Length: 340
Image 1: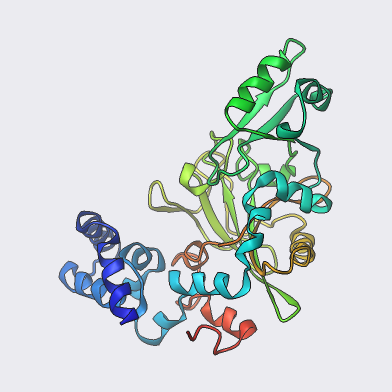
Image 2: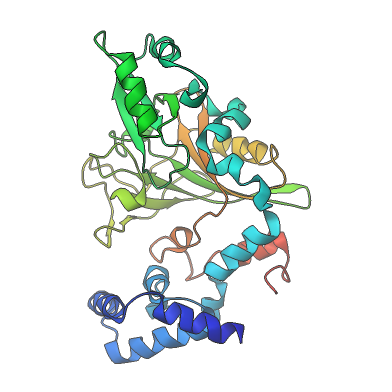
């Protein structure tokens, strides 16, 4: 019954127009028969709970048989969060101001909350700073973030009112990015998504990928036109980056021309260790996707997510041996973890 419900939910979650658009795109990329692919997509919805969007991202047109079972789907991702995360404590991660307060040891920058201070406090905070970042505390995907330029003529009463009215209560010192990371894209902080799992008192690092802006935006979020690429366990990129906006893979960044294959993330090992330590701060939330920035001195936390995405880490252009991440999760959580 559950599979049938999932089948119809996935089938009608999107539109047939978009489904056939993806079929045509895959046909152009692979030469696979459209008719066969349509029925294969329907089969994958029922058999693997994989919708047509994941079908394309995971490269299922080129993956058959038992390898398809190695891919974690949306239901698996939700199950991990349900079993390892106590929703009562989600607000610590969902509220950016609370996140900075609880993980201040790993934030590595000054911050204030406009809900707890006045315009004069904002003025004092901005002294000696050329820019600050203002954030809406409950938004995600890069929404509600602005870069504010501070000059001798800045009217802090006016700035305070503008930010407060926009509900951009969290004001942070601007992160200075490591020059090597700026080679990827200089217009944003190119954050590394690092996923950790805390299970039975032990923390395990699962995977990492780096996100970067298109070279013009001040945020690196995928939904804002950015791109992403997986990082090896040794901190080295060996794959092309993928851009959702264009649906294309890039061997080099189209703006900076930096080649991805062979690019080494600075202080990657230190970043992994930082995330593993941060995972122990609130142990009632055990499945976290950390957004990490690399500064010239150290890696720092940007934010934490209680439901890390399951699709980007299984992008067909980034995986090896046509295998998804589910076996890696099972090796740490146990073979029976995903059984209802």
